[in-house]
Length: 503
Image (cartoon, rainbow, N blue to C red; front, side):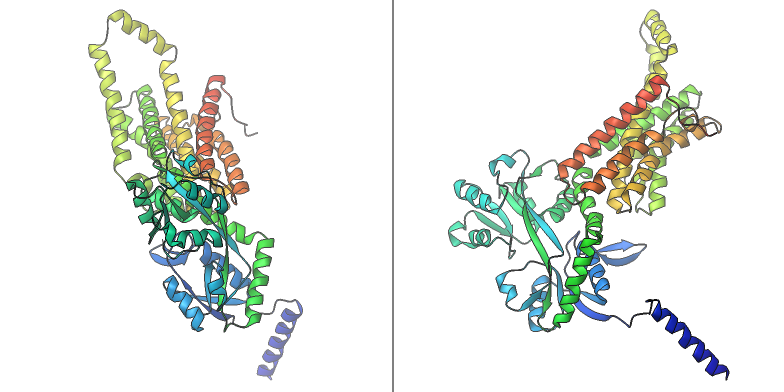
């Protein structure tokens, strides 16, 4: 009787679940797929010591398959072999595939689920040589400029049949230079072996950043939009392909695919900014400015040399270290290179030596007395506020860039948090040590609020523009953010603008 009662109770529960429309689905069918290395579309990422397959295509395909009621079994296979396996019917699907007449003879294609953007990469300052916005204009420009040598990826299709025919035409053999990878095309461009090359925009952005070539090359006007599909084997049932098509349409409608794309698109394009020489210069300026502000704070409190060095290090490194520990960034940025520690040491040493040299070997007494009067009127305070504002601004933009690069979502929440923590965190730690628990930047004036407001505005802009943002916009946003935060903070100091008070 007891067993019968339990069985009846279980049946009742399942009946109620089914009536509520919440019945547990049967085990999902598995679709076999292949992937081929290419960041940010398909790549292995280290997470907590574990290798995880991820990327723009991988995450989109997983979402599509899940919505369609399928699981996907990914296996690393070179692309040519994947195509052969799909043709033979030994593999079900390939993600991120361009549809052309050759593949259509044996493959079945889903509706497009995203698009690639191919661009023309040229040496900086030479974008005007081929001002072609599309494939037709590119063919005309290449035909007119007989000396232009175009780099392409060997075996790639650029979707436009006329452009593909132009590239493979033996009559153009002296103008077309095929390479196995974007890395090789970039090397040839910098070596003067080609005058430009075609590449997928996100992939080549990461290559340019890692090679440190951001200041040496630029994108031309060309934009070749390439729709990408899931290519299925003819052995896959038509109902399966239809289920995937329906899932793609649903995920496009609710914005899921666009949100996944933005997670990988923004970091790739931002890498052109963060990997550039001027952004490195921004980090250096921020470090020196924050360290100098820390030194001045220590001098005003009559700290020892070591105490001044400690305040300088806290101001320059504290916010970034806390940020990296919170998001699990490895290695911690401040410890990835000894450069930042050396910059802090050099800043404090130079300031300390200059101060002692002035006291001992300064100009005439009258000049020293004049400077003393100016100092009493607030020169030290002005220098501190200027250095502190500059460090706050530079580090806030670095923090926002780290949040974008780490793919933390939603960006409009965590971008401002990381920006404020990076920009203001070091200054707060400095003031805790300097002020015996009194933190004026949290009590008497607007401090954290300044980077918070500016980074919030920039984050909203990035979210709004995520689908069509250009690399040049990233640079403009960083410049605007640094200038806006620095000027706003100085205005706060000059006019003594206080924060909203707790009741």
